[in-house]
Image 1: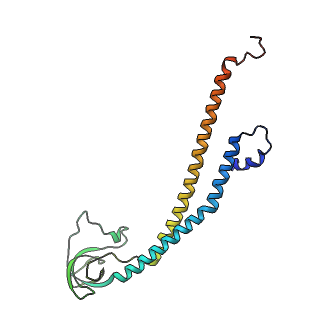
Image 2: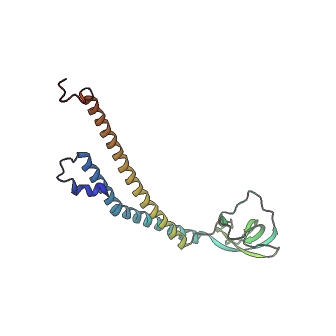
Image 3: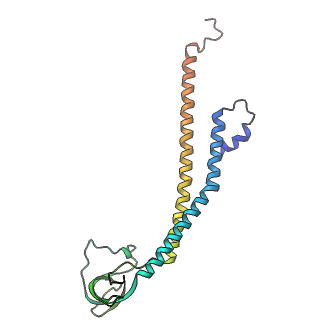
Length: 201
C-alpha cells in the first residue's frame, strides 16, 4: 500500500527513481488482480467443481443401491483395518460376515461393516451395493458435494492471490538486487577519489 500511495507523491518528485514507479505500479496491478480477478477465478472453479460433483452425486445414486444385510456372525477386527466411511470415529462399525440379496436377485455372503455396536446373528443393517451386489461406499450426498465445491473455489482464489503476491515479491527482490549492484559499481568508481575533493590532491 505504501508503494501504491507513492504513485501520487512521486509524480513530480525530483528524487523519484524509475524503479520506484515500477514497484508502485506493480503493487497496484497485483492489488487489482486480487480484488477483481481472484474472485472470478474462485467462482469459475467453484462452479465447475459444483457441476462435476453434482453429476457424480446423480451417477452414484443411480448405480448404488441400499440393501438390507443379515448378520451371520461377528468377525474380529484387524489392528490395521480401517473403515473409510468412519475415519472420524463418530460411528461404531463392526466387521461381520453377512448375507444379502443384490438388486439383480443374486444371493451374496461376504464381510461387511455393520453399523451395530454389538451385532448378533440375525441382526439386520443397511449396506450399499452396485447392481450386482458388490459392496460399495455410500453415495456422495448433495450437501457434501456443495461443500467440496465451495472449498475448491476458495482454495483456487487463495492460490491465485498467493501466486500473484509471490510473483510481485520476486520481481521486487530482483529489482532491489539490481539496485544494490548499481550502488556497488558506483562506490567502486568513486572509491579512489572519495574524500579528495577540495584537498588539492
